[in-house]
Image 1 (cartoon, rainbow, N blue to C red):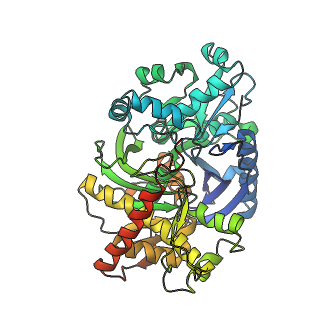
Image 2 (cartoon, rainbow, N blue to C red):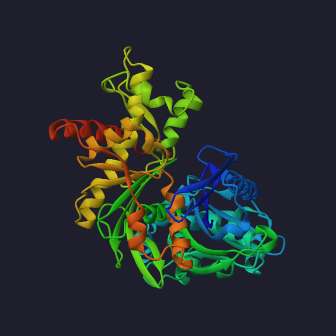
Image 3 (cartoon, rainbow, N blue to C red):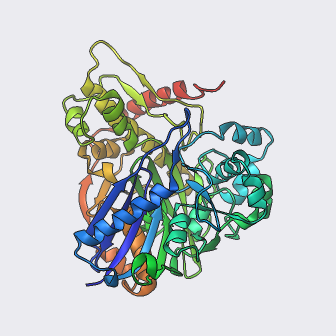
Amino acid sequence: MSFILSLDQGTTSSRAILFDKEARIAGVGQHEFPQIFPQSGWVEHNAEKIWETQCQSIEAALKSASAEWEGIEAIGITNQRETVVIWNRETGKPIANAIVWQDRRTASFCENLKNEGKEEWIQSKTGLLLDPYFSATKIKWIIDETHGARELAESGSLAVGTMDTWLIWNLTEGKSHITDVSNASRTLLMDLKSLDWDTELLDLFEIPASLLPEIVDSSGSLAMSSGRVTKSPIPISGIAGDQQAALFGQVCFEPGMAKNTYGTGCFLLMNVGEEPQGSRNRLLSTVAWRIGGKTEYALEGSVFIGGALVQWLRDELKIIDSAGEVEELANQVEDSGGVTIMPAFSGLGAPYWDPYARGAIFGLTRGSSRSHIARAALEGIAFQVSDVAEAMQDDSGHGLESLQADGGASVNGLLMQLQSDFLGSPVRCSAIEETTALGAAFLAGLATGFWKSQSELSSLWCERWRYEPQIDGLLREKKRRVWKDSVERSMGYSRE
């Protein structure tokens, strides 16, 4: 048998999944790595540990499938976006920890640029807002704050990349320094129309062009692994940022089709076709993928804290012992008892974009229980997604006929029902939970002929669960008003 090996490098773990021709999972490996929190609002990763855990995951996936390297037809890569690492080209060693997409250390720098009137200009070029979330200010910070880095950067001795680039550098033993167009579109450094690095943006952020990888298609003959790493050379033929990969894995190939991934954060994307779509509601215009030189675009809204809220209930409040317990606990009450949880631990993403917002619990009384808090947590996730969906429908002109759901928390039936209730639209859960990894596999397999067409890919997708709205419009509107009030109360909380 032959397989596509999909590497899914996430925020908390590195995974490797083998897919067969029927898009079935044949083998899985997963290894977590430490989260590093040097200061409040700072989040870092050890990039060498990421590579180590990715290699361990590959070996575990091969073992679980009883597969050999010779059975791998191609490699697809998907990754946590915006997280960046800079390394020395000669040694291959990072000069500092990677700065994670959740990190807020550059908030004041972004605020200064906004005050200078730069945001509209930047958005017109990149489709993105001026926020610490994106890569450019993280790159500048590492160069400026790491001893000797500015000199090395100017001399061409350093390389920068998001996690796809870092994995490919290691898989090819430094022969390929590339990123795909979907990842490049998340850096604040790529022009959304020319699909190339923008010299004016590089000058603004004081980033030498020599650091940057080559921008390539999301599917095609992109790179070849080193036989010393993978036992025999294997084509790396699919690359996409995690959310674009999930959009592809959910076969959202037509304009107006949308998906939401319930992971550490929540990410809602809608395919908008072959032209970038501007936003009146502070959503992001981004590249979905480029295949054979044809580019398709998406609107995106990001919720910073999704499943991480359930982890917080488990690890910090300790009201559950495992993430899976939250549904049972929340189902012990009919509603949240007036409790609202605002999960703005890392600020608020779309459509608010407030890095100074902070988490809060509103509406507590002596009668508030663990169950009310658990239910309010699930509602907080669903409300955030509904805010993004409302803005997206307004921007695109496409009504949301249904929402395709994936990610770890999509197995939570109560969360999915709440989501359908708050959206007023059906929610459809994929039979394959790992649609992010599947999307990377689809992109890789299309390039090698493992799968022949997007039509064939569509035929492989199937629905496992479907949720229909169970509350009326008046109750939905009442709940949304309470939620909006909580949003307003939490915004700007940490501003000095």
